[in-house]
Length: 306
Image 1 (cartoon, rainbow, N blue to C red):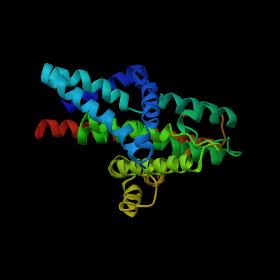
Image 2 (image 1 turned 60 degrees about the horizontal axis):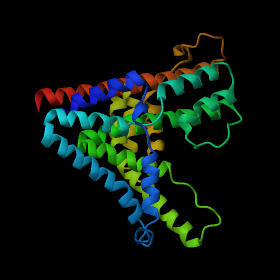
Image 3 (image 1 turned 120 degrees about the horizontal axis):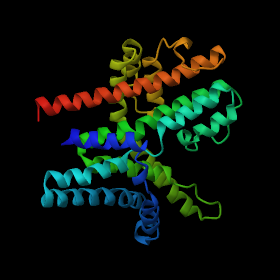
Image 4 (image 1 turned 30 degrees about the horizontal axis):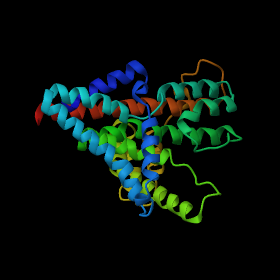
């Protein structure tokens, strides 16, 4: 059943380009604001975060159990596919990266930065002044977006089912929708927001710690094994680096040996542009192979174990 749910969800992503029709997060913002207005939660640090994140997960588990009791496997499928689609990351990853590359090959750095904004999500407030800096920022952001929008969700879905996928997405939404406190707010309010943000970021780091390392080992198998495995082993037990940092180390090892001749640009561009473009194109191909490997492993598990 898990394989069928994943295939249906990924098939719809291919049709729509993303889970866009189901990506409506207004309810989460309203829910978070409603919880924040309760004095009981405001008085205890971290309690608001726990309620905001865990109650939607509990609701997803209850709905899934009810659907299974009423309709059996069909009910599980009808509930799981939409919830898994909702849990996938926002935006069309391939379109954003392709639009960025087109502007990059035209040597339009400002346009390339604008096209890459869905990937950056506020990581970089202003466009870098040089091409190499922009490329490094976009490469790092694209790698993490690919991970958080798909691989982390699939990992927790396969481990904990639909509630696991929902848990990861609402945790990510909590971090993404946390606004900096206004200077006009009291010191207590600012401190409370700071504690909740730190707790949410730490929780998200814990949720990503294992799946990013599983993905890293996958990248070693489908990419440059020697380079990626060396980076994977060095950062296997790292407790300080963020998920994006660790993933960047893995990808640099897995993509070792990329040459400018592998760039598919149909226009005359500089050698440096071709090399950077080839690296991002290779990133897309590598992630596609990693996803295919995950699906193959799931299929083999279903065939020989389930």
